[in-house]
Each structure stands twice: as C-alpha cells, then as structure tokens.
Amino acid sequence: MPEENQPAPQANGKATGGLRPTTAMLVADAIASEPRPHFIRSLALRFAETAIFLVAVIGAIALGLGITAYFAEHRYVLAYLAAYAGFRFSDLIVREDAEDSPPREELSRRIVVQLPLLLTFAAAPFERTYIYGGAAPAFVRAFGLLLELLGMWLALGARIQLGFFTAGRTAEHPVLVRRGFYRYIRHPIYAGTFLVAFAWTLIYGAPVTAILTLIIGAILAQRWMKSEEAAMRSRFGEEYDDYARETDALIPAVW
Image (cartoon, rainbow, N blue to C red; front, side, top):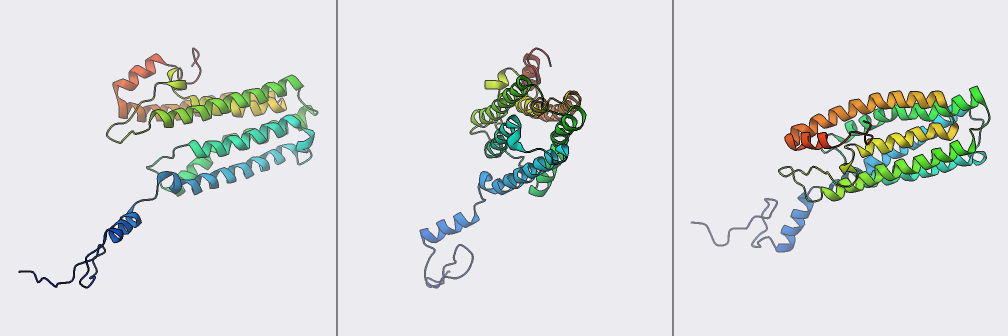
C-alpha cells in the first residue's frame, strides 16, 4: 500500500518533496521538449545558402568582366542584380525545405545545383567583354530585364501558391496542387528560374552563352523533373498520371 507522504515525482523524474508538479512546471517541460518550428529551424540554413550564392555571383561576374567594368556604368546590369538579390531573399522566405535531408547535406546539394547558374553569370559578361566589346542594344537589355521580372513573378508566385494550396496537409493526407500556375504547367518554379537565368544572357547580349544556357538548362530541367515526377507518382499514383496528361511540364503547348 503506498504511503501518503511519499514524495511525488517531478515531470523530469526527480523527487519534489511533498509537492506535486504544478501546471506551470508541466507546461514549461512541454515547451522545452517541443521541436523548434520548421521555419525557424531552416532559416539560418536558407540565409547561409543565399549569402554564399550571392557572393559567388558577384565573384563570377567580376571574373567574366575581367574586373574592368563598373556596375554604375551598366544600368541594366545593376538593375538585374538588384532585382535578383531581392528575388533570392524572397525565395528563401517562402520556400519549403526538404524535411528528409540533414541540414548540411541539403546545403551542399543546393550549392552544387547552383553551379551551372554561376557559370552563366561568368560566361555572359566574359563573352561580351572579350569577343564583342561595348554593350548590347538597349532594347535587348530592356527585354532581358523584363524577362527576369517575369521569371521572378512566376517562380515566387508558384512557391506562394504551393504553400497556400497545401496548407493543412499531413503525411497521411498529401495534397496535389492543380490550381494557380499549376493548372497550366507542372513545374512553374523551374520555368521561372530558367527565365531569370536566360535573361542574364540578354542583359549582356551574349548569344553563345544564351544557346548553351538553353541546351544545358533543358538537360538539367529534364533530369530534375523526371526525378520529381517519379516521387509524385509514387505518392499520388493515378491522380498524378491524370494531372500529367492534362498539363505540360515546363512550357504551355510546347513542352
């Protein structure tokens, strides 16, 4: 038979004398044991990735220019980079991270994925500076800036829509988004990101780099989309097959 004066255990297993755990003690222990929210947990990783990439972009541009040009003398270049920096930081705020990858592996994967983009940033100014000289026609540069803004709108809008339409989903009840941009193409984020990268080649008027960007971008996009769609089919089955038959992958009515 238990003794009436036996010390009651605390929530952490230690004796409390004759006192029982209070509600405040239990709430404090519960808060301490809760996992940190996903957004807070990944924010430092996102900022680290973006800071590293933007520094690499500036280095790539400086290499491509031979460190001879100044952004103040190239208004469209400066405008592109200002918008691009805003795009990267906005993207890291609205993006959802892969939950099954350790932080270090996730950061390494993202940096490797960005390497082709860094090559584009270096190659376009290099081609313009050392092959053609001068600057591209103003209408080409203006079109490149417009294309960049369109790509940013598409990529960021798709991420926001993805988060909005999947709010409340669980592992047992996943949600296949088929509204918004996803009503027309299955990979609007890839499409928008590609437009942003291709716009850089127009800012400098670098046709060789533009062609290489199209070819390499198509190869990489095909590889990434194939992997992503295989994962989606394993999760949604026939529902995703029906969705794939009704939509295009990257470009409406083309691809």
